[in-house]
Image 1 (spheres, rainbow, N blue to C red):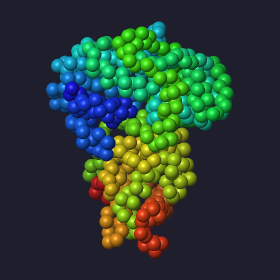
Image 2: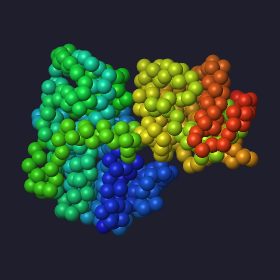
Image 3: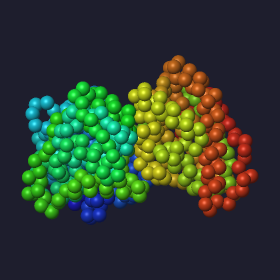
Image 4: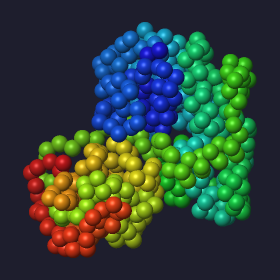
Length: 496
């Protein structure tokens, strides 16, 4: 069967594709920027089509000749306009998919009663729009529990970091979590059946506080949870955004989704898919933790750019650049391995305390800070998050370009290149900043004295670490101790 997958770089789509390939299906993926597929294990096994669901003219080539399509996109990161973007995207896709046999969509469980969060209401509206134009199976699920999922990360960090929790009284409300492994069983199984309309899925019903308590039990922690009636959903979401890696714009819909009981009627799912028995929440936690410990996190909530535009650096005037070069007595692949392992739990090799302070300042200003970490301690894929950076380009074994997503009066990039030079490598590190108005220029020049020291030490640290990797043949004198600083100031070239 020929299948189109949208949201291929997202948390669900990135895990679904390998499953579909294993079942022998021909896979086509629709992405705004095809470069973001680079480096994924299944890159050469799929057909890649560039397009944007918000640009209807780009959709027919992606849908031409497919037997089924997975709709796995949403605009939750787009702020207050996310409902309008979700509505427009669904209409464009539904109209373009009229000739497709079926669409399979993953939405969220709706609570009973009139008061429904805007996020869950929008997810349901998307399903209605799709069903109005094309045969659709709409799975509705509660919190998805898996390594790297937003719901699991929220539970994980709250439990790990807070021995005593003052929680809103609605933490007693019931939810129905479901393992990512079960999601990846339901989604492919729907291909073998006619369009089913709405199918609610989930494991056992649990009060939300039990999600925290069970996690603590699995980890061997003792935790005290004290429900109080004074925490509003907004305050609770802000607290989640401060304590966990989840940014406020994602924490708000997650919290709003449990303000009221959110439980599914799974009778139809059991009847239609009798061979799928969802694993317990406890088992889902155990599987997720095992994958994290073994560094087998295939995708992560922060990997998707959602409603943000695909990143592209073009030639602009007024770009500040600082370029540093150093000869490294190690192979390019060893140098590449070092600078692509920066960030996350390993930190930044030089002035790590300063990076952490900058991350805290960014969090207080509403930015991501360092809380997003990284999906894998060694591997990087284009489009992934690394602390407050986004991987804008990665070219093994020579180059990496990061773009800052912290709160700044401008746009910043940090990139490295490792090119063969004699019996070693020429490492080039470039810090670029495109200021926004006078505030941006003042920001650059006021911090440049500090940045000059920091970036020089970072270059040396990358070089030194590469030379110390097992298998290198460098000696302590191989590295030029004088790191050549390039020009600093306005530059009319692209920061590539």
